[in-house]
Image 1 (cartoon, rainbow, N blue to C red):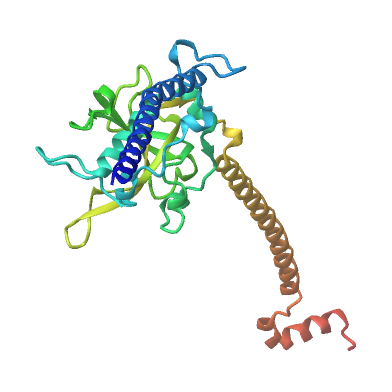
Image 2 (image 1 turned 180 degrees about the vertical axis):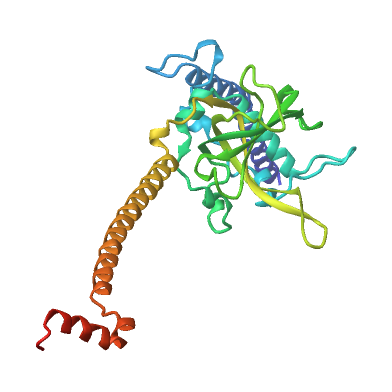
Length: 329
């Protein structure tokens, strides 16, 4: 019995010793763990602030974004998903939050207002056919793209920036109606440009009688539909559609040179053709009259050779004269 008790006591002492050793060994490890994490975070922060062979940014500025990327719109922005490809602009009701299309409208104008006009001109794409902006199967390729166009300013309106959108504290907007340069004599289909600036000294007007030639670099937003003063047979207003652009401003250009205008060349060609036709007609008329005179002269000579049938019934008188000259006959 004594031996068994001594064995139990020795076993219990051994177990307690093992547990105490484990606890003692664990305590310094837990105290060192926060210190290791702290050192790791310090080394990480130090590596972020001190990149080898890379100078730190000045005044905390972020790295510069390339010009081409800074000018472009974020086409994948969720607001653009709700922009109707063809239709009028949404009408916002008081007390209700703006629609996503209105927010996209606001976003594009605010973005354009921050870009230098020289950069807009540098990266704008020119030469896109007008009809490609209207046709349903092609207009999607150009919406939200930066495009360049030229034309004649027909109307300029100024209106308050929509309330509730912000527009980066922009108070006034300008709406320019521009007749494309390539469509001056056809059915008037306009570019509608909404911008945050207008050329200095140019007053808004419903119609400019003197031609004002302009150019612009702006983002193609959508096909805008709007009612006109024209009436359908049923009395309802006639609706038209125009490409809607959103940008910063537009520029007044000098009048196009006449020598380079295809219309002037065509008019000159038409005038030359008419002149040639008149000259040819005059020559043919002279030739005809001259030939007519010859024909008349020949006809008169033939008339002189026709015998006098009235004197044909007077044979006795001829016999008398004949006998007087020759009595012996």
